[in-house]
Image 1 (cartoon, rainbow, N blue to C red):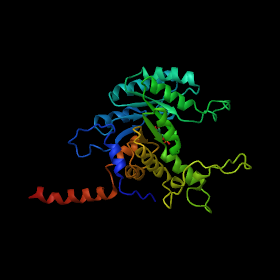
Image 2 (image 1 turned 90 degrees about the vertical axis):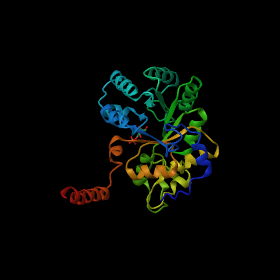
Image 3 (image 1 turned 120 degrees about the vertical axis):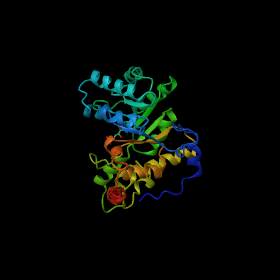
Image 4 (image 1 turned 180 degrees about the horizontal axis):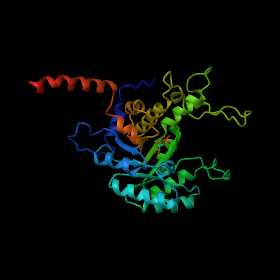
Length: 306
Ligand code: E4P
């Protein structure tokens, strides 16, 4: 189980310098921002109009789910979301995988709206089919080039703190650790005879079993404990490292699956939570709140009957 110590003074000090959307007198002035993780404009509209969110993250899967069947349709949806959300940031993901094409596409997406943020996959370029010789630094180079030309970036598909650090070092505005997918992976792949989180610490090369185990995540993250909250521990690890070095790249907790993970991200010190619309719709609810409200309303009839 995540055992967050009292938030360190370094974490709090860093928060004092981070982006704010509330005025100085607001009681939650240092609170993290909430984004919607969605490409469905009908879901996003009430959330922004109600003041619940001040940003959106999209990705190709979310755009496909929202109905996009071509790049032109996807661009049109992204343009509409950017317009609705102005001036709040909207992350739009690159689909090109070669540096020069990525930079051209980044400019195309940046032109869709001045509140766009370009989502760049941190790695994985050698894993893409027929790209075995791809430059492993492609994502980092693109982030750096976009930083140099004043374009904001969101380094996506982050699964360990090393990736987050390198993305920040390249100039990323945001890093997106995918905590839900990390926890899902661990649930599925942990070997029960080993310590919890073993599948994250040693991601074994199943296809080439002669190869020895490789270390991919810290023992801190891997040591998820009985509740297997490795995803949230990753957030805590990145926040701590960023506080150690006063790195101002924002930690955008992504791939959130439920309200409990959301709470744990707050305990871990995330700068931004990007949350699916259906989870956002449920944050004000609790079964005991329902029961309590029904009973208070029932008792209040006593006043109206007199
Ligand atoms: C973040 O920016 C991503 O769009 C998102 O959180 C991915 O979440 P998933 O694991 O539910 O696909």
